[in-house]
Image (cartoon, rainbow, N blue to C red; front, side):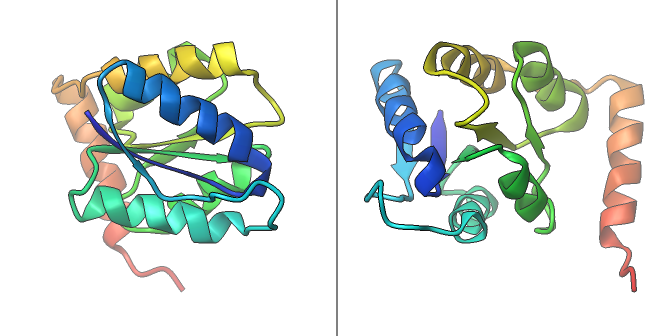
Length: 151
């Protein structure tokens, strides 16, 4: 699978680890930075790079790592067509894809370790979207809300 991957400075080490982990398992990784661990980087910048890569088809799914995962999650969900979630367990990682069409995974490098991150990423990438009527119906409602222009 083609995976866009990026992190702010807080997520640099975990991002580096995950890039190697994914490549070793045959995934194509589009590493969108950061490349310098000690240079302060803002999570909105790296998150937007991943989101744009997913939207324009350079990647099938995206992964963003920041300190908690929350800032990346909030940022990603501001971009129409991106359905992101912070996941720190494997159930949420696969269920988010299967039921909710999650296309960007957000991880907190200060919350989870590398072994759990590997398991979560694997669950996220192996999950397939469910076309059960209830999930399709609910996702349609999400898209209607997304298309509204709220003040």
